[in-house]
Image 1 (cartoon, rainbow, N blue to C red):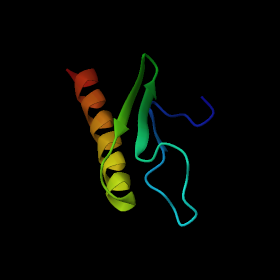
Image 2 (image 1 turned 90 degrees about the horizontal axis):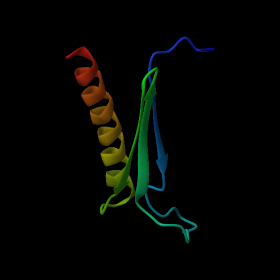
Image 3 (image 1 turned 90 degrees about the vertical axis):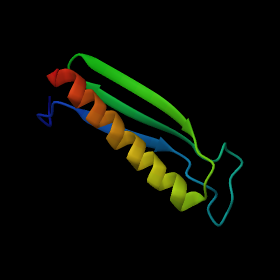
Image 4 (image 1 turned 120 degrees about the vertical axis):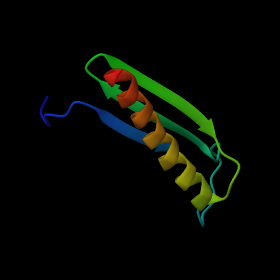
Length: 74
């Protein structure tokens, strides 16, 4: 590919309401991982505040990557 990568990890969603508020589903996030023979997406609905939801989203994405790399090697 253009970036010469083997895996791509992504996180998207809404961690929590900002100062302006939002009418979208708060705390709904998705983690995705893609590789040559693999595409995984997981959905999460957190219950914490904005900062807790962000932390949980990052941890979930890193766990997804670690689990995927572990499975590929075994």
